[in-house]
Amino acid sequence: NKGVSLFPDVITLRISNIEVCRYLESYGMMVSGIKKLYAHGEVIQNKWLSADEDIEIKKQIAEMLHVCYLIPYQDDNVKLIEYSKDIAETVLKYNPDNAMSLVELLNYHLYKENNKKAETILKKLAIVSNTEKHVLSSLALGYAKLGDEANAMKYLREMKENSENSDN
Image (cartoon, rainbow, N blue to C red; front, side, top):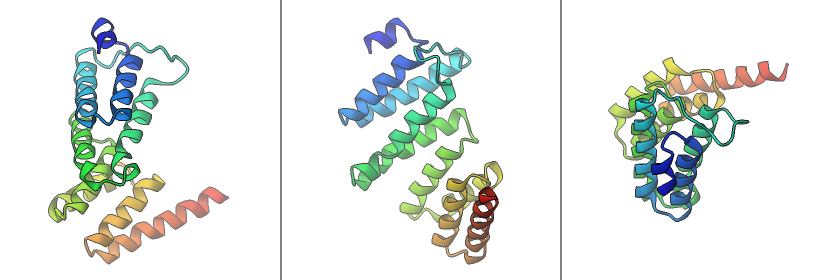
């Protein structure tokens, strides 16, 4: 935290701090760090400084989020899904079209059987990003879990078509 307070605009320090919290299983602190990262990013209009100039800042953030979203699955502790929900809601507050966070929030609501919320997220996800393979599979799975076989099959067919087209 000392480094972040001395150099608040250096994204690399913030991400490192978040990763340390994750490693130490201080998940509340990890989520707090992500919230502070996004809030400060808005203040500085996302004009971050980085110690790792070779990696685009958006990619650094995406990689950090991906690892944080995996926590409930890696630790095999579904109770940790609340942290994923908190992270997703934070990201979506600042970037409402973030497909990765929409998928995580969808997973949360499907797990909690909040079907109306899951359906709303599915509809938004289909508009925002319906060509990425992981999004298509989430759309198919989400609709299947909600009992909408027609839409589930639609996205399964799109996955198949996309994989056949990428092979050519």
